[in-house]
Length: 491
Image 1 (cartoon, rainbow, N blue to C red):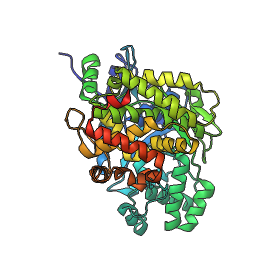
Image 2 (cartoon, rainbow, N blue to C red; image 1 turned 90 degrees about the vertical axis):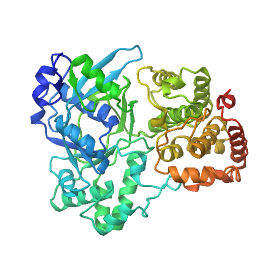
Image 3 (cartoon, one colour; image 1 turned 135 degrees about the horizontal axis):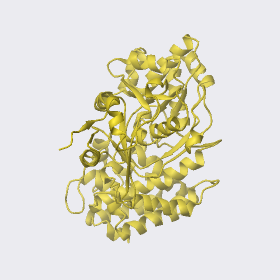
Image 4 (cartoon, rainbow, N blue to C red; image 1 turned 90 degrees about the horizontal axis):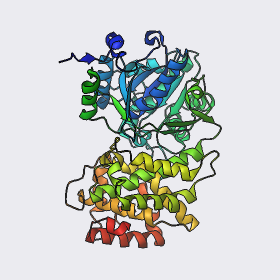
């Protein structure tokens, strides 16, 4: 039996005989990017692009330090520390081919939940030029219906009283920016890489609102000196499975405790607006544009909403993965009808994008049999996603007199999903949502009030007052509760 090779700096020479490893001198890299929220997506996307740049040329100012602000980040911290920041990226092609390589752009990882000063000091370090974020929609702490900052959050209340002991991203950012200002250092760029429309604008608005309450003078400085470029990011990155870990062991004798799998497609469109310099990402395929909003909207309303259409309806039907949905012709037809009839008509003008080709490409990506993205992952945190991805499309079409039937069925299915927690066969559905209890409570009143679920104004705004929507929604909810065989309503 061949001896297992542990992934770390000492074993790189041995690993490089079997698969690509970093060719640049990792120990000479400076930390120029501090990244908060080191999940699979960051490692398949921004860290990968940064790795490509290091491979292509001398970019030694742009090493990445990962940051975890929650106790739940302890595991990824421990794994990456053990592996000297490295991990394997496993790219799964639709034709069955698999490319694997070791990524080396993350050179450190720090935790902030017990020792916030360690993270504040890293953000405030003279070498740090960018603080980037993948903290999910929920991490931005705004009310999804109003878009306003949520000051009721207990962690926010704590850090307003104790600014040197922050808990949320806003407390850490303000503490670090204040320290830099006092030390005469230029402000860093705050670079959001989350799936939120106008993500840079949202990050700016939330940070300024928080800072204004904490320190009005600092808020004025942030508004003047800190850049918040909007960006559109895209790469399907399923949760790592034990099978992925076993694949590396069986194929390369490589022991990687937390590799990342992804599809071959990758895209990053970002506004060229940085406070204190940036990596030359355009040399590795990143597109810099003056205004990213039309591209963001395209991706959110087609890819992200499309995922939710398949995920919610697929969960009720009993499909376990997104590619399983795409093996079902009823789901394929429904998805395309939603994209063509409801999402596309409300998009903005897009330069250099063939929308038909983009949608064809999306279908191919969703159908990739080697990705097997779980329906439960796609449905996770739907309360944070659907207001931006899907409900906004319904509102636009109501205003324009467009079709709403495809998206409305998804909302009705979401009600059943939140209420019953089972698919049409009575099998339990895994629901992952910060508002799970609230969603269930509202949905459980549907039999006595068909509109109970959509009366949650924080999620649905004023949709419960729109007669066209409520008439269609009530009819669909009634039918699903009578017979949860969702495909009957999709044909």
